[in-house]
Length: 496
Ligand SMILES: [Zn+2]
Image (cartoon, rainbow, N blue to C red; front, top):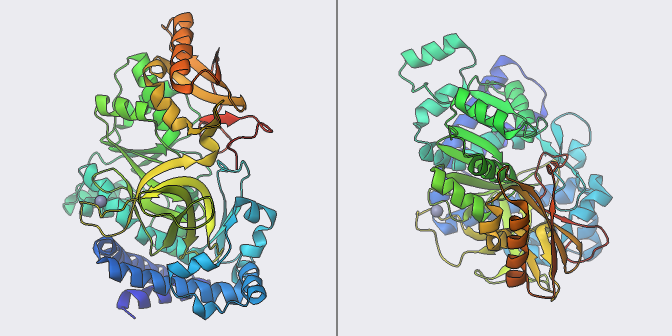
């Protein structure tokens, strides 16, 4: 057992007694700081050392599940599986799959008996973007706190891409008041122009997480360089905030920056873009990606889920996602449930290994993706998810029976959609599609509709009916995301 493992074990133990005195908070802060140092190194470890860490974490999680989580305890007993025989990620294939429906049906079966009461854990709601149902996800405080350290893996990339120095980034976290700010500057920390703008819903988990940090450690709840904006404000208001705050980094959902970039392009107004735009939650279309490149605002993404925390993160190359496999084992499986080879696309199945409050093994996220058959050129040895094709719910059914992701279709309609402010694909029944479009102010609607329909015949074929409907706006979901595709209920096709 390494010193870092000991620190982790002690941190987990210290969270279960509810002492939140100054000494306990100081100790927890130091622990997070020390663990962050190791977290920064883990992506660069040799593959075998990463695999060994994954095996240790998996074994600990299985023992915990067998002892305290009803679903797994009963499953192991009924199938005659000895928990001790699950020794590595390859053994997960012996367990059945679970999915959002299993969780929605009876969430408490997956919650550890150690975290049934309100003490020591938080409950978050997933966005429900796959199943349409917002599921409660429990997180224990120690694992939430560990996420502050784990985040170091992508934090170093983000600050590097934004051209910031690491010391300044750490120092600024603690600057909640002007006098601390002045002190930091006096000590030589780079404290200027480091504003961040978060365009995310108020109930987004990071806020709750920061509240826990401030209760359990000396990490402040509200550093002064964080600014918040709900994703429901008009784009012009967001642009005014960008101009006033001049943030170096903006955080939002993928669909938000996607729509925002289209708005910037359509309005033709000069907008003060940040050095880096970090998106999460959902994806960005190829059309918006091209617009970002033209404007000179790099996009960066982390791949996460409420059920797992950060599953993967992009490196400086901003191509695939390096998977945090020691914290969340990832399989890609075909329709028969068997693992597909790297390079082949399948369903993403995760087994989070950090969170003790809820235990999910072999959990189908509803995303499709492809593992890379080769190592990344950056030198990190965490395996790479080369492509993430998005939620199954973002697939529509064409007249000839093909299932196509709306992201791929948006790319095919790229030239036409650039003339719009927002666009959403609606499937009323398999083979019947409607582009719901918010046209740019100066656009010629009849010619735009004609161009979209003509493109549709070309890319969808004659067997798919395509219409265009002009609308004034497209509402966000309750979770604050922009719904890229709507498949009418009972329409069959691609909904899981
Ligand atoms: Zn890389």
